[in-house]
Length: 191
Image 1: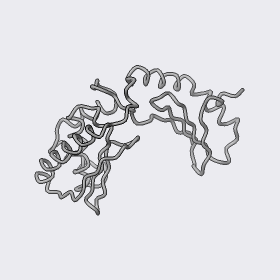
Image 2: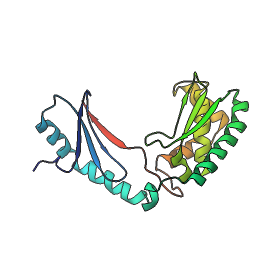
Image 3: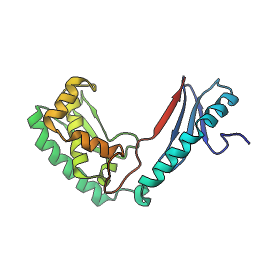
Image 4: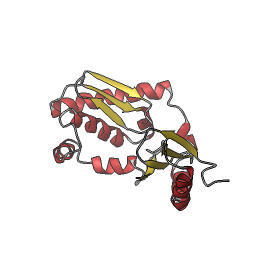
């Protein structure tokens, strides 16, 4: 029996060995194809305390209904809220949004296509306070002005939604929330 027997291993064309713990407690290690198994076993063994700590954190902060799918009624309500927030903020920010889509995203709260002027919002936000939804909408609108997370981008966030930092802390699990969906997977990389 090896330290990685109860861990899902994925071998693929990657440069780094990565270890992550999902909110449901599953441990996943992504391994470069040519890496020897004994190196993987040693890496996992060396991080067993980190794995246990992450699993304990997720058990404490993820309620049982986190895996509950978003209902159609919740999805419609979320779409209406997002449309209202875009209608409120886009003109003030001087941007145009041609299309708004909801998507069940596991690792992001939102994304945008600058060229197409389209934003996607995660349906997981239905489980969070509206301040978090508003912060994500403003975040994506700010990306229509400034592509990266540059000082100018954060200045836009401060200008158009000054409470974004608190919302971000809630989304990242550092502040309490009403209902907690699966957080973005945490991870460790190894060269």
